[in-house]
Each structure stands twice: as structure tokens, then as C-alpha cells.
Length: 190
Length: 190
DNA sequence: CACATTAATGGCAGTCAGTGCCAGAAAGAA
DNA sequence: TTCTTTCTGGCACTGACTGCCATTAATGTG
Image (cartoon, rainbow over all chains, first blue to last red; front, side, top):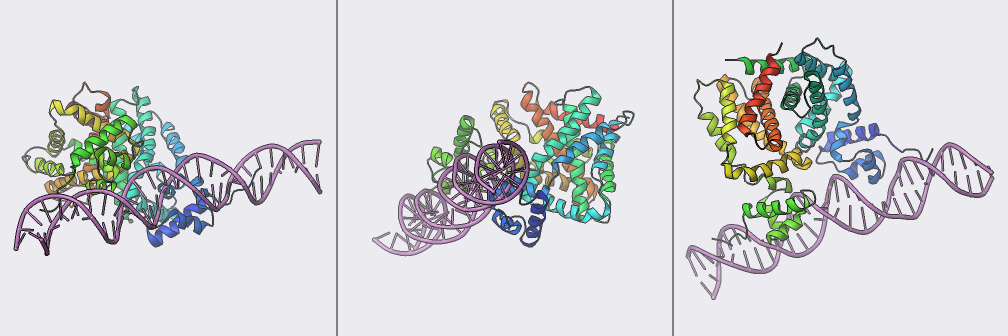
């Protein structure tokens, strides 16, 4: 019961992306988004805690699924393969959903304010990996090994995503594998 | 000629750190810093473009030295060793200068707003590495290999630095080597 | 049907970072 | 002394964000 909501996170996200496309992220004010949705500015901030959070939409929920993918991996798969496959599966999208997903990631990865703000989200992502690594190796989450693996895994994902923006013809999966190949090459070359 | 300056970046930095120590980064306003220095708020913004830039002090200059360290490395040193040693040397400090350096890094690495903002600085750092890698391998800077190596190198450095905050007794150099060891372990383990 | 309860809205005033503008101050040069 | 250069700092303004609170619109109860 109680008064019914006037909007949804999804509706706000769509309105915002419309304005971002027209005027850019910096060039769009929260007042303009509120007007576009037809809602008070104060209400907007109840749906998204900050302007920087809008481009991510409702991504938070999905971290749980990332955890589940990892935990559901058979233990006989090597650590590195388990993580690589989990990252891959976590980032699988329907072919239809890929263009908007790419637009979203382009906005996030190429807008300085969002690049910066996003590291706070990545921290949770890294924590999922570090926790998994720590468990499989019987280490503490804070130990150097889990932390290193988590940081490096994020690096690979970010590098692959960034390359994906410029090479739409290549699949994200292939780029993730390529990035891992680069890493192996880098580490094992004499 | 012209009117002499009233302050210096260094003086502002010191005053700011005094206040940060007392009230925290978020709890310190630019107005308070200006008052502490004894200078107009408008002037403050001419010395530091944003509050987030103050904790870094005058670090920008030093990226040149990082480039020089890399370029001065003999070509018969393997790529990975060249980078590892350059990162190491770039982060060498007098034993006397280490406690303040650690305080600075603790503030930067543990304050969310600064964690976020700092990625914009790291981008320049990564560019130095990517450029070096591209040159040595005859690739374009934008190619996947240089970008991957740059991202991963940053990951290792950040992981080592973060561990250093909690283990002051261990040298940063040792932690950088340990992080690299973790990476080798991760990539080459069956 | 009247009335209480609940939950969301949105306006308002205020904080804080950051910017453009411009008058004024202080130094050296002519 | 006057001109020129350069730095200062006040003022007004924008834009994100917050706390406070009256208002609104549902639902539940007698």
C-alpha cells in the first residue's frame, strides 16, 4: 500500500540515455533528466544516488549471478580457466542486446567522470573474484595472491571491453581470450 | 615582473594534509584549506584544479622521469624485467621520505573519492608503458598487447601499494616482486 | 462511508565544488 | 611617475546532492 511510484529505474535510464546521446553526459543536467521523465528532481535522487550511477542502470543485482557462476564451476577446472570462463559467461548478451550494451559501455569507458566513478563499482566485482580465489587456495581474501588475481582479471576485462568498442566486428569473448593470450605472452616470453 | 605569488603548491599541500589528518578528506572544505593557507578560495583553484588533485601534490612532472627510466633501459633486458625494474626505480624513495609518502598513498588509495579520481592520472602512467611496449614490439599503442601490459602493470603496482599500507615492515620493492610472482603463479599453474 | 495508516512525491532551502568575470594590488621597466 | 605585467581575491552563478517536511494517493479498518 501507500502512494504508488511515478516512475521506474528503467524509465529514468532510458530518458537519461536519450539526453546523453543528444548533449553528452556532462552536458546533461539532473534537472533536464527530471524534466524529461516528468518527475521532481528530488525524486530522481531516490532512484539513483548520483548522476554517475545512471549509466550503470540496475547492474548491482547481477553481481550475485557472477558469484553463482564462479561457485558453480567444477573444482577440477583450473583457477585461471574458471575465472576466464566466468567472466566470459557473465558478459554474454543476446545478439539483439549487444548494440545498446555497447553504447552503455562506450559511455562508461570513454567519459572521464564515469571512468573515475566506476572504479568504486569494480571494487565489488574484484571482491567477488578475490573471495573465490581465496576459498579455492585456502588463503585470506586480503592476501596478495587473491588481490593480485582480482586486479589482473579486472585489467583484462577492461582492456578487452575497450578494444571491443573500436572493433565491433570482433566478439567480446574473442577479445577476452586475446587479452589473456597477451598476458601469457608477456609473462612467459624470455 | 608582475605581482609576486602569495603561496606555493607545496605550502597548500602541507596545509591541506594538516586538515585532512584532523577532519578527513571529505570533512575538509576548500574554504577551510584556503583559510588555513591564508589565501583566497579563488586563488586555491589556480594552484590545484580540484580538491582531488591536492593529495597528489606535484606528481605530474615525474612522469617524464618514468619515461626516461624506461627509455634508458638496455634493450637486451626482457620486456617484463624492463618494466618491473622501471616501476621499482620510479617508486624508490629515501627511507626518510617514506612515512609521508605512505600517508599520502594511504589517503589516495583508501579514500573513495580519490580512488575514483586517480584513475584519470593512472591513464597517463599507463600511456607511458603502452608507448614503450609498442615501440619495443613494433606495434601500435592502441594494439591489444601494449594496452594489456600497461593495464596489468598498473594492477600489480596498485596491489603492491595497497599491501604496503598494511605491511609497513615489508619494502614496496619486495611487494612488487611478490605481486609479479603471484601473477606468474596464476598464469603458469596447471 | 469516514478515517487512520502507509509510502511515495516534490518543493525549498542550504552545502560544497568549481567557473567566469573583473577590479585592484604589487612588482619591475620605461 | 607612469606603464605594463602578472597575480590576487571578491562576487555571482551553475550544478550535484542532502535534509526537512508538507502533500498526495493508495490500502486497511470500523
